[in-house]
Amino acid sequence: GAVVSQHPSRVICKSGTSVKIECRSLDFQATTMFWYRQFPKQSLMLMATSNEGSKATYEQGVEKDKFLINHASLTLSTLTVTSAHPEDSSFYICSARDQRKSNEKLFFGSGTQLSVL
Amino acid sequence: SQQGEEDPQALSIQEGENATMNCSYKTSINNLQWYRQNSGRGLVHLILIRSNEREKHSGRLRVTLDTSKKSSSLLITASRAADTASYFCATLKDQGGKLIFGQGTELSVKP
Image (cartoon, rainbow over all chains, first blue to last red):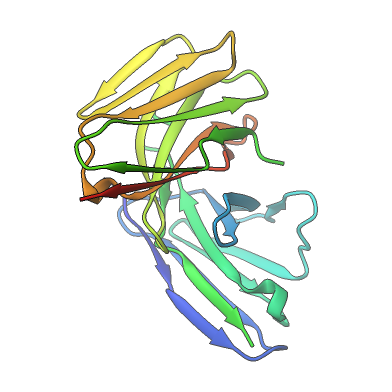
Protein backbone atom coordinates (compact mmCIF):
# COMPACT_ATOMS: atom_id res chain seq x y z
CA GLY A 1 0.00 0.00 0.00
CA ALA A 2 0.89 3.66 -0.21
CA VAL A 3 3.45 4.93 2.28
CA VAL A 4 3.55 8.33 3.93
CA SER A 5 6.72 9.27 5.76
CA GLN A 6 6.71 11.94 8.45
CA HIS A 7 9.73 13.46 10.15
CA PRO A 8 10.79 14.08 12.80
CA SER A 9 8.94 11.67 15.04
CA ARG A 10 9.68 13.70 18.13
CA VAL A 11 10.76 17.28 18.75
CA ILE A 12 11.56 19.06 21.98
CA CYS A 13 12.15 22.78 21.63
CA LYS A 14 12.30 25.96 23.61
CA SER A 15 9.43 28.41 23.64
CA GLY A 16 9.71 30.94 20.82
CA THR A 17 11.47 28.71 18.33
CA SER A 18 10.00 27.46 15.07
CA VAL A 19 9.65 23.81 14.23
CA LYS A 20 9.30 22.29 10.77
CA ILE A 21 7.59 18.94 10.20
CA GLU A 22 7.91 17.14 6.87
CA CYS A 23 5.40 14.83 5.27
CA ARG A 24 6.36 12.82 2.20
CA SER A 25 4.41 10.45 0.02
CA LEU A 26 7.02 7.84 -0.87
CA ASP A 27 5.47 5.83 -3.69
CA PHE A 28 2.71 8.03 -4.99
CA GLN A 29 1.98 11.63 -5.81
CA ALA A 30 -0.33 13.61 -3.60
CA THR A 31 -1.79 16.88 -4.82
CA THR A 32 -3.52 17.18 -1.50
CA MET A 33 -2.33 16.37 1.99
CA PHE A 34 -4.07 16.89 5.29
CA TRP A 35 -2.64 17.98 8.61
CA TYR A 36 -4.21 16.89 11.87
CA ARG A 37 -3.50 17.67 15.49
CA GLN A 38 -4.20 15.32 18.38
CA PHE A 39 -4.11 15.93 22.12
CA PRO A 40 -3.67 13.03 24.55
CA LYS A 41 -6.67 10.72 24.76
CA GLN A 42 -8.52 12.80 22.18
CA SER A 43 -9.48 12.48 18.56
CA LEU A 44 -7.77 13.98 15.55
CA MET A 45 -8.65 17.56 14.73
CA LEU A 46 -8.25 18.61 11.12
CA MET A 47 -6.07 21.70 10.94
CA ALA A 48 -5.61 22.37 7.27
CA THR A 49 -5.58 21.03 3.75
CA SER A 50 -2.29 21.35 1.94
CA ASN A 51 -2.62 21.90 -1.82
CA GLU A 52 0.31 21.42 -4.18
CA GLY A 53 1.20 24.65 -5.91
CA SER A 54 -1.36 26.78 -4.12
CA LYS A 55 -2.24 28.10 -0.71
CA ALA A 56 -3.34 25.81 2.04
CA THR A 57 -6.90 26.01 3.30
CA TYR A 58 -7.28 26.21 7.03
CA GLU A 59 -10.08 25.01 9.25
CA GLN A 60 -11.95 27.49 11.36
CA GLY A 61 -10.00 28.57 14.39
CA VAL A 62 -6.59 27.54 13.07
CA GLU A 63 -4.14 30.43 12.75
CA LYS A 64 -2.54 30.35 9.32
CA ASP A 65 0.31 32.60 10.41
CA LYS A 66 1.03 30.29 13.28
CA PHE A 67 0.93 27.07 11.30
CA LEU A 68 2.63 27.66 7.97
CA ILE A 69 2.04 25.03 5.33
CA ASN A 70 4.05 24.64 2.16
CA HIS A 71 3.31 22.03 -0.50
CA ALA A 72 6.06 22.69 -3.00
CA SER A 73 6.03 19.35 -4.78
CA LEU A 74 3.70 16.45 -5.43
CA THR A 75 5.40 14.38 -2.75
CA LEU A 76 6.21 16.84 0.02
CA SER A 77 4.23 19.02 2.38
CA THR A 78 5.71 20.82 5.36
CA LEU A 79 4.09 22.24 8.45
CA THR A 80 6.01 24.90 10.34
CA VAL A 81 4.89 25.79 13.83
CA THR A 82 6.15 29.33 14.21
CA SER A 83 7.18 30.81 17.54
CA ALA A 84 6.06 27.70 19.33
CA HIS A 85 4.66 27.95 22.85
CA PRO A 86 3.83 25.27 25.41
CA GLU A 87 0.18 25.25 24.33
CA ASP A 88 1.32 24.13 20.87
CA SER A 89 2.63 20.92 22.38
CA SER A 90 0.70 18.18 20.68
CA PHE A 91 0.85 15.22 18.33
CA TYR A 92 0.78 16.33 14.68
CA ILE A 93 -0.12 13.85 11.96
CA CYS A 94 -0.16 14.25 8.22
CA SER A 95 -2.10 12.18 5.72
CA ALA A 96 -2.58 11.84 1.99
CA ARG A 97 -4.78 10.05 -0.45
CA ASP A 98 -3.41 7.96 -3.29
CA GLN A 99 -5.31 9.49 -6.17
CA ARG A 100 -4.31 6.71 -8.53
CA LYS A 101 -6.85 4.62 -6.76
CA SER A 102 -10.55 5.17 -6.69
CA ASN A 103 -11.05 4.55 -2.99
CA GLU A 104 -11.26 7.31 -0.49
CA LYS A 105 -9.08 6.07 2.32
CA LEU A 106 -6.24 8.12 3.75
CA PHE A 107 -2.69 7.00 4.41
CA PHE A 108 -1.12 8.49 7.50
CA GLY A 109 2.36 9.40 8.55
CA SER A 110 3.58 8.09 11.88
CA GLY A 111 3.10 11.44 13.56
CA THR A 112 5.31 14.02 15.27
CA GLN A 113 5.19 14.56 19.00
CA LEU A 114 6.01 18.20 19.66
CA SER A 115 6.95 19.27 23.17
CA VAL A 116 7.55 22.97 23.76
CA LEU A 117 9.33 23.83 26.98
CA SER B 1 -16.44 20.12 15.58
CA GLN B 2 -16.22 16.38 15.30
CA GLN B 3 -18.56 14.61 12.94
CA GLY B 4 -18.84 11.38 14.82
CA GLU B 5 -19.32 10.32 18.34
CA GLU B 6 -18.27 6.94 19.52
CA ASP B 7 -19.07 4.73 22.41
CA PRO B 8 -17.80 3.35 24.53
CA GLN B 9 -14.89 5.72 25.07
CA ALA B 10 -12.94 2.86 26.59
CA LEU B 11 -13.41 -0.88 26.45
CA SER B 12 -11.46 -3.55 28.29
CA ILE B 13 -11.95 -7.22 27.42
CA GLN B 14 -10.19 -10.56 27.69
CA GLU B 15 -8.43 -12.17 24.78
CA GLY B 16 -10.83 -14.27 22.77
CA GLU B 17 -13.86 -12.11 23.50
CA ASN B 18 -15.58 -9.97 20.92
CA ALA B 19 -15.32 -6.18 20.97
CA THR B 20 -18.06 -3.93 19.68
CA MET B 21 -17.63 -0.21 19.11
CA ASN B 22 -20.32 2.17 17.95
CA CYS B 23 -20.20 5.40 16.01
CA SER B 24 -22.85 7.99 15.34
CA TYR B 25 -22.61 10.81 12.82
CA LYS B 26 -24.59 13.90 12.04
CA THR B 27 -24.75 14.57 8.33
CA SER B 28 -25.46 12.48 5.25
CA ILE B 29 -22.53 10.42 4.02
CA ASN B 30 -21.21 8.62 0.96
CA ASN B 31 -19.17 6.27 3.05
CA LEU B 32 -17.93 5.69 6.57
CA GLN B 33 -14.45 4.51 7.40
CA TRP B 34 -12.83 2.90 10.41
CA TYR B 35 -9.23 3.45 11.40
CA ARG B 36 -6.97 2.05 14.06
CA GLN B 37 -4.26 3.92 15.97
CA ASN B 38 -1.61 2.32 18.11
CA SER B 39 -0.42 4.53 20.93
CA GLY B 40 1.74 7.39 19.68
CA ARG B 41 1.50 6.34 16.06
CA GLY B 42 -0.34 7.29 12.91
CA LEU B 43 -3.62 5.79 11.81
CA VAL B 44 -4.15 2.71 9.72
CA HIS B 45 -7.21 2.26 7.54
CA LEU B 46 -9.24 -0.81 8.45
CA ILE B 47 -12.40 -0.84 6.40
CA LEU B 48 -14.73 1.37 4.37
CA ILE B 49 -18.46 0.88 4.08
CA ARG B 50 -20.52 2.76 1.52
CA SER B 51 -23.87 4.35 2.20
CA ASN B 52 -25.66 1.73 0.11
CA GLU B 53 -24.12 -1.11 2.08
CA ARG B 54 -25.47 -2.44 5.35
CA GLU B 55 -22.72 -4.81 6.39
CA LYS B 56 -19.16 -5.56 5.40
CA HIS B 57 -16.59 -8.09 6.54
CA SER B 58 -12.81 -8.12 6.49
CA GLY B 59 -11.09 -10.95 8.33
CA ARG B 60 -12.11 -10.68 11.99
CA LEU B 61 -13.73 -7.29 11.40
CA ARG B 62 -17.43 -6.78 10.80
CA VAL B 63 -18.85 -3.34 10.13
CA THR B 64 -22.49 -2.40 9.96
CA LEU B 65 -24.07 0.81 8.78
CA ASP B 66 -27.56 2.11 9.51
CA THR B 67 -28.07 5.31 7.56
CA SER B 68 -31.56 5.82 9.00
CA LYS B 69 -30.06 6.03 12.48
CA LYS B 70 -26.83 7.61 11.27
CA SER B 71 -24.80 5.01 13.08
CA SER B 72 -22.20 2.35 12.46
CA SER B 73 -20.65 -0.40 14.51
CA LEU B 74 -17.31 -2.16 14.36
CA LEU B 75 -17.10 -5.69 15.69
CA ILE B 76 -13.78 -7.40 16.27
CA THR B 77 -14.25 -11.10 16.81
CA ALA B 78 -11.94 -13.38 18.79
CA SER B 79 -9.87 -10.44 19.98
CA ARG B 80 -6.14 -10.67 20.55
CA ALA B 81 -3.80 -8.67 22.76
CA ALA B 82 -2.38 -7.16 19.56
CA ASP B 83 -5.79 -5.59 18.86
CA THR B 84 -5.15 -3.19 21.75
CA ALA B 85 -5.39 0.26 20.17
CA SER B 86 -7.72 3.20 19.65
CA TYR B 87 -10.37 2.85 16.97
CA PHE B 88 -11.90 5.79 15.14
CA CYS B 89 -14.73 6.15 12.70
CA ALA B 90 -14.46 8.85 10.07
CA THR B 91 -16.65 10.49 7.47
CA LEU B 92 -15.98 12.92 4.66
CA LYS B 93 -16.64 16.53 5.57
CA ASP B 94 -17.25 17.79 2.08
CA GLN B 95 -16.25 17.26 -1.54
CA GLY B 96 -12.74 18.36 -0.70
CA GLY B 97 -11.90 14.92 0.62
CA LYS B 98 -11.42 15.98 4.23
CA LEU B 99 -11.96 13.21 6.75
CA ILE B 100 -13.50 14.08 10.09
CA PHE B 101 -12.96 11.66 12.92
CA GLY B 102 -15.10 10.53 15.79
CA GLN B 103 -13.95 10.65 19.39
CA GLY B 104 -12.61 7.13 19.28
CA THR B 105 -12.79 4.03 21.42
CA GLU B 106 -9.74 2.93 23.37
CA LEU B 107 -9.70 -0.85 23.32
CA SER B 108 -7.62 -2.87 25.73
CA VAL B 109 -7.41 -6.63 25.21
CA LYS B 110 -5.90 -8.46 28.13
CA PRO B 111 -4.06 -11.71 27.56
